[in-house]
Every structure is written in C-alpha cells, then in structure tokens.
Length: 568
Image 1 (spheres, rainbow, N blue to C red):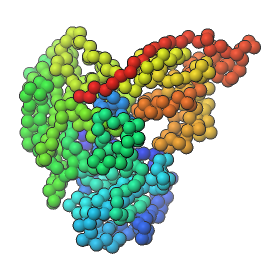
Image 2 (cartoon, one colour; image 1 turned 120 degrees about the horizontal axis):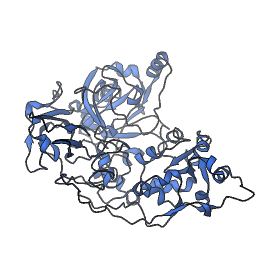
Image 3 (tube, one colour; image 1 turned 30 degrees about the vertical axis):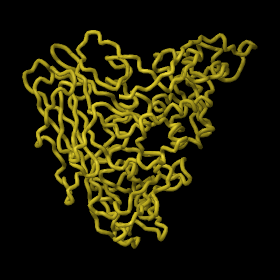
C-alpha cells in the first residue's frame, strides 16, 4: 500500500498451481519464447504477431486470489487451502488487446453471437499440472461477456508498462477485471468457442464456495463440485486495516488524533461507496469522509466500471482508548461485510468485517493485534497461541481483563479418537499438544517408531531418486508419490532432505495428513552420536549383535477427542 494504487510487479502476489512452464537464460532466448509462442484455436494457430496487430489497450485493475484472508477460516476449521493473509492482492496496469477483437477479427466470430448461449474456453499449457485428463489449467467465460468491451477482458503481454514476468504469465495471459484471479489463465495456450462451459478439471475442482457443512469427502462423493450455483466469478465486497499495523503501539500519552488506514474493494465493476470504522465493536460507526476514500485516477472507466481497490484513511480521537477497531465497506449494490465469517471447505471469499484488537501497553498505550499473520507466521488474535486463549471466530467485546476468561475449548473435527503412542524424540517432545495433534493422530507402525533417523541421514535423500521429507519429527519417503502429487513432484523435491513441516501445514488438508501415514519410515533424533542404537536403526544395522528394541524408546500417550465445528 505504500506504493499507492499501483503495485510493483515484484510485490504483486503470485498464485500458481504448479511450476512456471517457461524459462530463459538470456534476453535472446526470452525474445524467442515470445516470438514462437502460439495459441491453438481449433481452427488455426495464432502467434504473438497476430495479437500485436490488433488495437492496443490498457486496463488498470485489481487482481485478488479468491483465498484472500483464508487463514482466518483455517483458524476456525482447516480448509483445503493454504494460509493467505489479507495481502493476496495487487493492482496493476495490464496492456494488450481485447479478447472481443481476437474473437471477431481473428476467429471470425459474428458479433451477433453476443445473443447466443455459448462459452469461450481457454487454458494454459498441456501437461503443466498432474491433475485432469490433459494436465492443463483451464476455465471459461460466457461468450456474451467476452464480446462486451465494457467488461475490459483482454489478452495481456504487458504489466505496468513492461513485458510480463514469468510468474505473471509471460508471454500471454487473460485479464478479467472484477473477477477472482483464478479465472485469469496464465501462459495462454488455447482458446475455443463451445456450446458448454469448460470441462477442465480445475474449472470444477477449484474456485467454489460450497455450503458450510460440506466436507472434501462429501464434495467428491455427492458431486458438489459440479453444481453451477457454487462457482465463483466476481469478487465480493471486502476491506482490511493496515494502520495500526500488527504489533504497533498507539501512544495514549499524546493528545493528538490518530490516522487509521486500509483498503477496500468489490467485484463486478461495482464502486465502493462507503467505508465505516467502529471503535466500540459496532455500537457506533464512523463514516470515512468521501474525500478520504481514494480511487485510482482512471476510475471509473468510460463504461462506469470500478476495477481497482480504493485506499481509505480516517483520523479519529481516543483511538488509544479503544479495545477493538473494526472496518466494513459497502458497494453500489448495497453489499456489505458480515460481522462473522462463514466457513467453507475451500476457504474462499472470506470477508467478515476486519477486526483489530487493542491491548493495554505501557502508560495508557494500546498494542494492535490483527486476526492472523500470513502463512505460517505466528501471531494474531485468532490463532491458538493468542493471548486471549484458543482459536475463535469472534473478537471479544472487551480485552481489558487481567486474567481473561478462557474461551470454550474448540475441538478439531479432523482429529479422530486414538490412543496412539509415538516415540518422543527431541523434535516431537518440544512441540506443545496443539502442534502435535495431527502427527500424534497418525497410525504409525512399531517398525516406523523404532527407526531413528538423524538429520544428517535425512539430508542425504534430497533428490527425485530418493526424496525424504520431515514433518513434525516424522520422516516420510515421498519418492513413490512424486508422480501422483496434485501439485507436481517438483514441489516436494524442492523440500527433500529437510524439515518441511511449515510448508506441509500451510497448504494441506486432513485428507493429505491421512495419506501421509503410508509413507512414514522413521522418526527424527537430533544427535545420533549420543544414541548408537539410533544410528544403527537408521542404517538398518544391529547393535552389540542385537536388533534395536523398540521398547527401549520413551513413549508418550495422548488421547484425542472427536470434535465438531460450531460455525459463527
């Protein structure tokens, strides 16, 4: 946000489903990738020179991952998506040609087709990803939407005046302003007109908001992925607070006012018409003055569309007296943000009013605590380690308690009842009960528990030929799973030979944790030199003529409860 309404390409968020499929070693090779890129259409192949021959246009718009702010949902119940904070977004100026011109000028689509119920399908390179029949990422748009230039759908090769970076889809991608980022296919390789929407795997198995009680298993078994009512296209209304930042102390000793800042956005070209802030948990609201809600200079478009975010600020007195700060936005369709989040299995379109807690700090000051921090970073009032107790969906009415009452114990629906015993290595023993839940719920065999593996031994298995990873102190041989991994084998190999707990926790569901069990081969010990038996077990040798006895290992028993979600 320090860069204003336009995000530098180097800071713009990136979300890919697999490895970037293009690369080059020098500028000459980069140019060759551009010049030789083709887009199949079913009728003929289009080259970059064909697109360059069409009228050039630019559009400044906001791109947002549908999982923006997902980590808040993951703190209530694990979704199947990784931990986005509130920064899974970016604004840029995209340059290229209208998709409508491509269809009418290059593919001979009759403009009157806007009245027909057809679809434009598009996808990235074949064999790019492991899932689906052809390994591509694809989706589609109604033809009538693509032909309407008021929607500013373009094929882009420029970002902020420069050629696209590889991560952002070089040499060619689709931009659909007002839609979620998951519809904007990168490395565009195929376009076709069809009677039906895309049949691509990711068109159905991604970017959906399913009802709150639907689990991943139900979604597969009962066909929820294929129900058209739950597809996501347009963004919803959302906002967040950037100032005070997490951990910032608002000085209560000064007499001046304090300036709050943040962003707000909506989808479908709808204007954010107002932003409101409350310092008393919704008892009263302060309207941000219209001249303090700033849209980019290019807004609106000539068709009246608002494709970007707005930045807001408001100066208020007595902020250091507030126990909570909350923001909500409204758009021109009178959509606003709910008080509480509604969980969904993909954790998408999370948009409750953004809430910051303000804790007493020093002589009259207040320390800001945001709901979460992105990725695996610790901190935030919704996280299990929060000062106010366990993870919870709603900010408390007050934080000014010397000894806050503990919240009711939130139970994890993914941990089944078990009395599994696990070896206590120095790695697993140092974890608290909450951190150990998933690994302790695994059904590890006595043979696995008996085999002790040092990190030096783990480090030797760091290639595609022998790919071991450590998760929560347990070692897994992922080699046989590389070809089956939905995210591609490369994403596992890059973590081979090391502790990948943080990366695994960030993006995997309960189903993945269960699947992981069958690949367990041993547990980590910190120093084999202090444990000859451990070294022998790691190498499969015997000690003093006797096999290592699993019963000599210290064990810990922990009973897990069946737990249920209580959605807000």
